[in-house]
Length: 358
Image 1 (cartoon, helix red, strand yellow):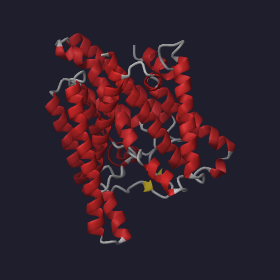
Image 2 (spheres, one colour):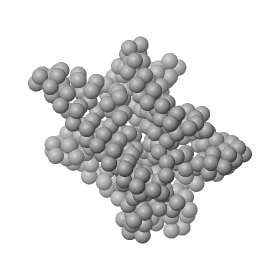
Image 3 (cartoon, one colour):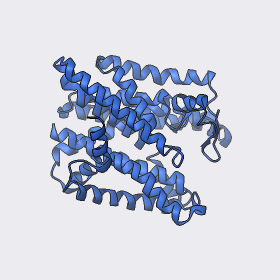
Image 4 (cartoon, one colour):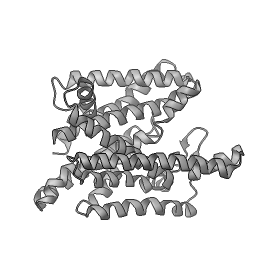
């Protein structure tokens, strides 16, 4: 059990670092050397997808025993705690969405509420729901114009605080809309119900997810090149439909995101099993345990400090600065986590959350 938890925390730490890199690029600037841009783009839409899949895994691990033993009392208590946590995350996310419009926490809370509804479902039914949401989403875009509400030049959602605009953003065309992003959490919920102690299962999943990820990337690239026939405008349009970009989150992106998330998590679980006492693994495990604290800190402190120093330059920094600062901030988070956990059992926000959902 411990090695499994170690691997999940390591994966959570890596996903947080990836999100910090992506978000700092968006806020500070992403123009500069092509090699740095290419390397940093690896995390686009994938780190956040992994973060959500991990939440689904966590829900499964916290309820598996009660479900297996048909302990309805324990399961009910778990559902109540998950629901409280979901509502708190929704409120926390909304509380600073004015300064960070691309927040994921308020979406994340709603994903959790939907996952709780399926908490007693059979694993195959959970996968069916996830697949159905992914496949239905493109048809929804026939009725809902994906660009409604958006100013893509500034990444501002113009009617976010109006009732219909808020619901549209939350469910259809926000940064991480419930439809289809809830599928990431549902896949994680399914994954967490599998035998994660089995190396055979983990190795099989690693091979399958690797092949799916590489295959989707390759087919997407070839299809866009072939169908665009060298026309850059057509290539850009096709990239939105059959590319692996997260906006809009069409099936190609969703499948790609699920594959890389499962691959990373499975690798981390195996590494956690085999190198449980390795200093790097322990450092990342500790960092993963403070993931909520660091997610909020990267907005409030990480972005806030730079904006306070020179607000007029926001968005005009180079990609080298954005990525370099993200890595420094992440390193400071790792150091803080390992010092903090020498004295406390939970991170600052994790401790507050624990108190509030008792």
